Image (cartoon, rainbow, N blue to C red; front, side, top):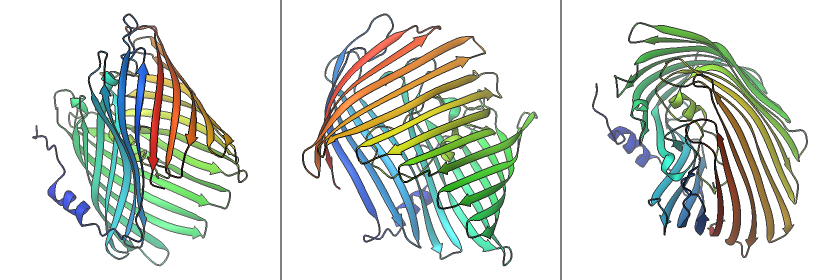
Length: 433
């Protein structure tokens, strides 16, 4: 078993410091806020609810640059909770996601850094509360070689060092080396075809609870971008060879698309039928940060060392008007773990957000998030329901305030039982833009 390295390698840290961000090209948007919260069941206990009051300091930021040398986009949020009373200890919670690509040699050699930092549950079966969250970070860094196979096909070779780290889940922590080769052919100005092969060697810190393995992926991607429709579809296969001599394999189908019905209406769809794991899924989930996050990036699923079969479909409808904003997103996901130590899960739910502008300075906000989970291995079912309503006031270009009410209800026929939570939160916010 290797010794755990808790910090970035010197080479990676030096690359981050040396990136030549241009003052005229880089854009930094940030939000700083202070607030006070009253929570009537801060630990989401089903038998002994305990209320608490807390002061929160928050900071959200988006850093982006798009030049021929540097392409960067990072979004993150940091929150410090000072609990004035109640059973909960003070806490620092963070989230960060982004990607940086730096061309060391124009159009030939670049270096990429990707990072995904989220708050994840420690115990998947327990309700969401401040004492059931841990920071989970997946960092990827390495060079890219860009070349031409011939006049019609471009090539790209990638090498990555990937480090996975969790505060509490020791079996998740690992280090892996990944190498990929891509052949890209532009079919026409709006479409392309990419043939990709990837090999990955995974070395877990805890060899007692996790199995090291080598993974191989081969797939073909078709991508189309039109004025109102864009989509990408992957089809291929995955093979996994474990260090103990066992193996598994699975087809790969992934797709994502968006249809901009009109300037105000859009529909997006995502599908997946694949073998994946917690680290790979975190890196695949890195998107483009457009707005400064006003809340932490969290996920309902815990992390572990097992590869799993992921069957997923999510659909989102978005409507934007001068005064009304609406989004509705139903989803379904089935997770079937390869290792017997993890519990298979089927999740289905819907997320809805609605906003309405009462006047140029007053806005109403509401959301609903309902999720049902079934753990077939142990015959346990849970239902999480979150509802919220808020009103915000814009005082000046930079200053605003907001009052929110949130209700969280957990129904559980397992160990933890049913619990409820009501939260009132008042915040004052400063924006630099």
